[in-house]
Image (cartoon, rainbow, N blue to C red; front, side):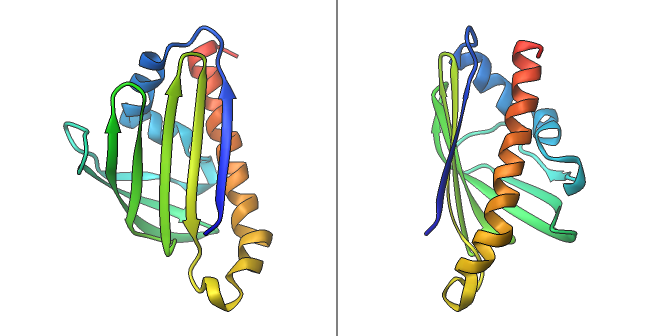
Length: 147
C-alpha cells in the first residue's frame, strides 16, 4: 500500500493551535485546492472518534462523494480519518500535531491496484496528492504564521 508523508515546520505554533485550526470546518474548505470544488455535505456538531464527515469533491474532474470516519482521536496531538467510501480502495490519513510542526501521514490504495494501479498512482495519483498537500501546507502556514 503506498504511503506518503508531508511535514510543515511552524515555529512558535503550538499543537493546541494546530488542533483548533484543523477542527474548524471552514479550514477544511480552505485547505482543499480550488479546482477540487469541495462541498461539505455533513460535518458533525461534535468531532471525536467515530464521527463521520461527508464531502463532495472533484477528483481529476470527476464529481465524487467522500465519506470519512474519525478512527483515532488524541487531543491535541492529532487524529486519523479513514475513507468509508470514496475514490480510493483504501485511505487512512493521520494528522499529527507537535509544537512547531504538522505532519500528514497517508496510507492509500488506488482502485484496481493489482491491475496497473501502480502506474496510475505514479503518473496521476501521487503527483495530485503531493500538490494537494503542498496547497494545504501553504494555506496552513498563511493562516497560522501570516506568510
